[in-house]
Length: 232
Image 1: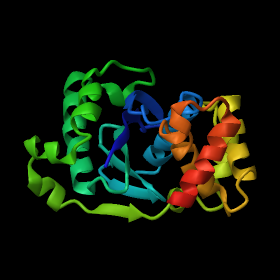
Image 2: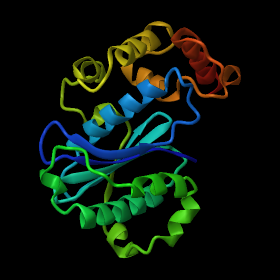
Image 3: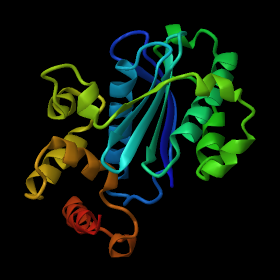
């Protein structure tokens, strides 16, 4: 069980803006870490924009789940975890995190600029173990009475006709290198049937365990990713 990303976004307007975020990418190759970071931001914006105020959603994308909670103040919290991380624990974290964030930044819903929230580092570090979430003194009744909408894929929250490929190509937050990596991941793995699987590739590509963590190029990262997919 692991947390990959935790962030706060302003989603009162479109496109959503990442106000602050922390990532745990130590298991990724240094050659792919920047691309993974950019894609976590892009997909967090995507799901935040498609979560209504007051709504909670879990969006599964193969081995990963995007946990989203949108507050009525025009901000949303997003956690990206593996599928083994308990949904209830993730949403407890989101509730506590957003309460604390809004106490410090009550007008963040009107901001389009990054803000400082050092507590995020503690959150992503302390709650890698979901059992630590038991210490959160959040009223359980709120979560019990709130329906968490579950989606099986990111594409299921997109508007009709939208494709992940289109989001990637139009994204201003992705570098040319990240877009090239996404495209290469699809082309070099003929067993992948669609762009959703390339999404997983970006998140799983280049873990440090491959080749002793000494990958030397994106091509070797992709080869390593292919072997990982076979194992999965």
